Length: 346
Image 1 (cartoon, rainbow, N blue to C red):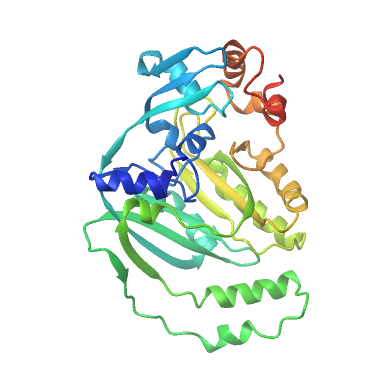
Image 2: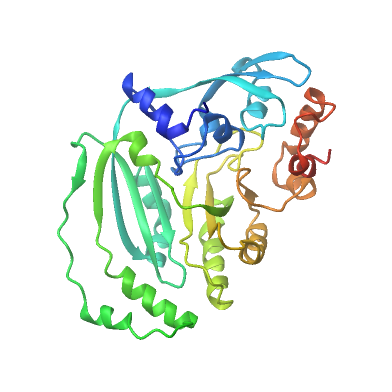
């Protein structure tokens, strides 16, 4: 049975007094899939899951067994985020830590207020991110930090609700205009009360996602992240795109893995857009994806994108090196499907 990063591995590690250094937001990913696609969590000082791999065993299509570790750093950095294109990973050794608890705080705030201080906020919390509401001036804000407090929900004093904000949310037409949706969203967001909870690390970092959806996520250099996010939100508003899903905006620490979204010397901001699985995602994603390209965006390998090797070789300094290694380990292309053939020009 595949080992799920949070649900299974998190529980097994906690039982022996250990915890993962970081985890992704979604609770359904397998260890192998999360590593191969460069899946990451949140934290300007925390890297993708692949960065915590200290060694792995790779079985190539011709039957060779390769034990890869830091004695060959180039090979390790290539094999960590492998897209399943180099062979089959049968064994992984990852760096963990002692078990720990986290305190999560959630609240709503004006998006521009948060973006103006995002670098400082990201640096002052172990994890910090926002979920910008479409057709709204507000975002849902999430901070997570280590704690010794007891496990449980924390009761907070409710803030008074403004009658004016309630009245502003009424009277929408059947097909509201962007301005009407903005008024309703702002009124609703202004009434959101903060909440806090404490639990063991894997229960705080990963969330149960029972609803099915399609997602596109790109990383851009952190210094242009806010500008990219603003353009996406404005485009949704200006073009009256019918979408209700929040966006997700966070920082990820830089690393050295060749095909990592955050490869390089500086942190990257990642931005996600979503569409319910029952809806055609293509019209929405086709409008937004070129905005990511404008800011030098790199795609998340496990999510929707339309790039091929022509664009990718410009975004990843070691992409051609990876293509060469792939041809060396799998000259007959046994590990390739149509999607990977387009990525690697094979």
